[in-house]
Length: 170
Image (cartoon, rainbow, N blue to C red):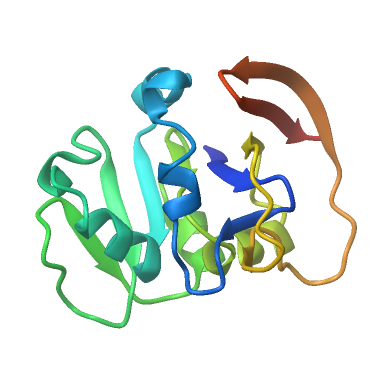
């Protein structure tokens, strides 16, 4: 099993503005400018929180998002309004440890899911796309407990105005 975080942040490390808004990202570029499709084609499972799921619901093609992966959403709700998304109500680390060892898992979205996985050393690869935007305030990507985590820089790519940094667990 390999656990990946793949996502875009601002230059000052935010996933969203203080109101959980992603307009800064949508106004900056699209996935067509990146290697997203190749990345997604190598994933078996997606895991996200309820806020990220709500953002997906806003998409016009929400029923077609992530068609080839098994998609889990951490929520207290027993059902979800989109087909192909499975609600989960337990801890992220506990859940990931139960998954098939032969699967590639993509952590989508924010620190609510990522932080406990980092705390438990369950993240194998972090692919960070950096957008040329400074928000000054917002929802940070990293909020794990204190404790040094080492990653090694594997690759640097440029996609239009985005930089992509690929780190693997050291």
